[in-house]
Every structure is written in structure tokens, then in C-alpha cells.
Length: 362
Image (tube, rainbow, N blue to C red; front, side, top):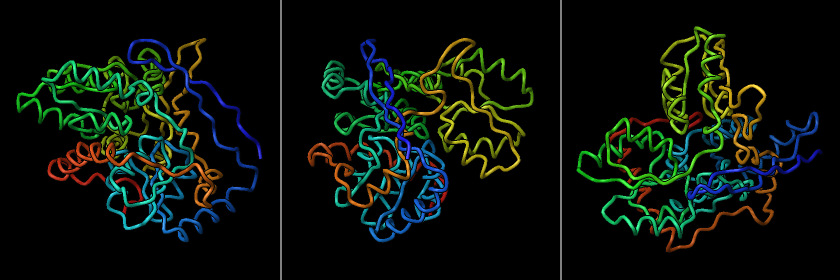
């Protein structure tokens, strides 16, 4: 059983400094090991009264397992909905840490587990709660809207939480009420929402290490090689990349756009993990990962989140077997405060969005 070496990921802090955080990929599967591990994990999920909630960006093994066992593969909005509404006493979140925290905030009575609690997010890391709170205090006239990719403490300081699938609608709603927005943390998503809605938005400074690496020039070159391909872009990407898009959307929105546009080829500018579900839904269609580096350059993420990659079958089984260090805990008072902006979003979604189900939702 091989063990992958840890890597160090650079990310930009809110003040422009460079931060470094480790990412440890899961153990590499030995030949012929997968079937036995999937069977073991399936048995443990059933015995532990647990449901697996997986993000589109995690390894296909976990996506397929979630679907096969009554869980879900979805974006962060649907992960929040699904874990909140499912009857299982234990929710296992295959994703990054803020997703596990969100599940715990919404379900304080449930046990919430994660394969690796050190699976971070550059947006979360770049938004420390104390500095963010001071930023909010300096602008008391603004409604605080935070992206899901933040800690429980940052959510507790906010008025609204949003995901990429609903950010535009919530900000437009607040804008129509005459509200001014304090937005955090993703500067590219914030820029996109501001341009679409016309809202008065004061931005925090942070970016996703995956989406920030997409390059417009290289996508244009790829379009020349694939002239019939449509370009699908996540709004965490830089403005020049978004300008090339045939459709801009959340992970679920990108899948729906591929189904709607009817092309034979797509260039996909988001984490490559999503392509597994796209191929399952649209067999015979070609999906191409958008380039993340120019000629002679190197990339950190190469269109795959290094922290999402920390989720695997081995550490999922360790989690379900009860190995210490996998349970998510959130301070009760912090959780109570953080639940308010999340529930505000979910209530808004019920009234203003169609039910945007992920793959495998019951």
C-alpha cells in the first residue's frame, strides 16, 4: 500500500501575503484492492446508520459509493440540504473542512464525520475570523454576505451565507432592497456577482487555488483545436476566463448547462472531479479539462483541488471504523450564530430556486 508524499500549497492571504498549507493525498490503492474496500465501506455505512455526502470534486470512488448507498453527490448547497433532511444519525462528509462544519452546524444533534479533518480550502484559510470580524466592524453599514467556503466562526459573523448556485440571486435581492454588501471571501466570484447584479459590494481578498489558475489565453488556444466545443466556467475563475464562457455556473449549474447546450465537446473550467458525473450523465460527449498553466509553466492544482484529493476509501473506512480524529465539532454558541445565515439561505432557496438535486439524491 503506497503512501503519497505531502505537498505544500501556496495561497494568497487577505492582505496579499503568501501563505503555505500542506495537503496530504490519500493512500494509493493497490491493484485489486478497490472492490474489497467498497464492500467494506458499504457494510460500515449500513451498520453505523450513516449516509455519505460527497462533493463533485472528490475521487470517483467516493462519488460512486455515495450514489450506490443512498447518499448524494452534489454541490455545497445540495450537500447542506441533503445532510439536513436525511434521516441518518451520522453524516459522513467527503469534501473539505468547511463542508463538515456546515453539516454539523445544521445538525448539532447528529454525528458528523470526515475522512480527513485537515482537508482545507484556500478561501477558508485566507479568511481568519478575527481579521474578518474587524473588517466587518469597520463597515457597520453593510450587510455581510459570506461564501460557503468559510469557517464556522466567519459564518457566525455574517448576515447571509451563499453558495455559487444562489449567490447572484441573494445579492440581487439585497440590492433591490437598497442594501450595501460586504462580500467575502472569493474576489473573483464577488466580481462576477457585482457585475451581474450591479450591487454596491465591498470585497474581501481571497481566491480558490484551483480556479485562479485557469488561463484565458490557453483556453482560447484550446478552442482553436476544438472549434465546436462549448466552454463551461465556474464563477470562481478570473474575469478573462469567464468572458470566454458559453455558460457560467456552480458545479450543478455546469452539469445542467452541458445537458442543455447539446454540444459534442465541452471545455470545463472547474475542478476536474466533476467530469466523472458529466460523463455518466452524457455518455458519448467529450469533456476536456481547461488548462491551468501556459507553455513552460507549472501548476499547483492542475485543475484538481489538492485538499479534496485527501478523501479516499482508506480513510473513509478508518472513519467509519471509529478511529479517533475524524469527528467534526463546532462550539455550541458559534454554531448557533452560524446557523442563522445558513438557514436564511436555505429558506430563500426554497422560495426562489427550483430543487437543484445532485446525483443520487433520494
